[in-house]
Image 1: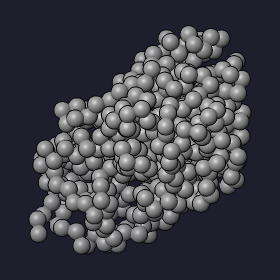
Image 2: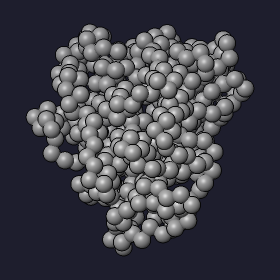
Image 3: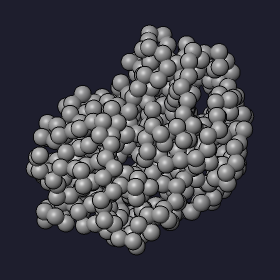
Length: 477
């Protein structure tokens, strides 16, 4: 049996990032995936009718071009192409107004009118400093390379989204802010919920929210092709429950959550570390729907048809109330819904003249409730006639999401609650959270900083630590 320098378990974008980072240094690596296809949260499958391609989890990719790691890879050489919608995001309201995130900062500022100046003051510093701030923002807790820029960001980013919302004068601007911060999948009154809203707005104004042609799987396929070109090896359909059955290897990288880590045999973790992992907290789950549609979604404001993502939930107050109730374990009638319509901009997703729809809402962790009616009613609220366009649908409740991808514990697609206590100290309080108590085993999943999203930074940072620990190699972006 062949010996390897490193074995990587799990082929999500972070597992692939770790594998690529190690293989780039000339190590002999093996990537093992338990499922029948690579990709983790970035897979595209035929879930409804023939000819329709659906992104099972991740769909729109704000971080795909904003991530230093993803930008460092020659993925265009391996077939990856992106398209851009005219608007990264839209947010319709019952008042018949629509808040829009434009692909430039100035356009967004102009569209917000009274609130344009405050938006500019909030977002422009991060927009301008993104290239220097990104490596620190998308990594473990450490002394930043640009401390003054980081401090300026942190003073606002660490605030609850509800605090920042009070500084906006109009319901339209507050609603736009609510939709962005609700991506954090936690109550908007939590500390640090402003961070994700600021990041999504800044990168949207700087890079757009790109859509991979052919589906999210295209990102993975390009990463895999590059990895193999470097000499990396891949095995599918191999669920590992005991690392002692693996080929000989020097280091082991795990694209797994703490829950799975604790179930893996042969790791020889210390009792203290295992206890810390058991205390790791999960966030809310999601209920997901994919549709095959006969036509474009008939939004009242047609500009919503030109948005990559449509945030559906009406006002800041309504979204904040329902996110809080969901965190408390309640099922709400009017959940916040994230809706994407990739086929509007990528005609490879559906047969000619037809379309796809993609959406999820937040639910209590582990909920098995069917939220189909609630989600479709929310879309119908702002797009009358939407239900008439539905040809077929595929649904996943929170526990079905976990069954599809065990990293989604209870339907938690972020790999754990990303509140202020677990934003940088995930899964345990440590300046090097990628290390486990076994010096040969590293965690590289979204349960490490910077958390969920298709950016590869968790995998890169884990590989960086492992390379330094075992080979004395230092890598940077």
